[in-house]
Length: 202
Image (tube, rainbow, N blue to C red; front, top):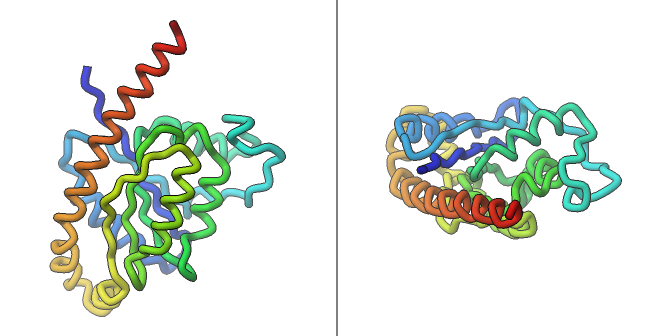
């Protein structure tokens, strides 16, 4: 039986004036007709979490949710077969809200792929490099292709929203490559996790 991978799009920025909604709209438009994925959005602005202060690491106490927000988000992360993070870049790093999310959970991320769409002065390249290290520790597979929206492109879109058409058109080939790899990895890891579960149950 073929399983359609369920991909959770995580919007990392929580700023009231954030730019994230622009690439999010483009991403949803580019993926809404695809039948080889199911997409869901997790907007961290809608899910404020307390700063991480758990007495035990989530790796040592899996799914031991202590707050209502953890209990809401945990099952959403668990149900995902892969992740696509829309990340900004602050001071050569990624947002505190995203780090807080990653720190609160562990098994929910394990053995799943993660891909990145970044925006910022250098397309959030430095934030994404840091995220590749952190997601590796969460036992995730980092999909190599990423999409980068540069700072000059962001300025052009803010000055003239019509410019977004050509700018995003130039990013479509890269997004296609990203999605192709994300589908391969999510499908492969769905099968691998299922096989491992069957082995554990035997």
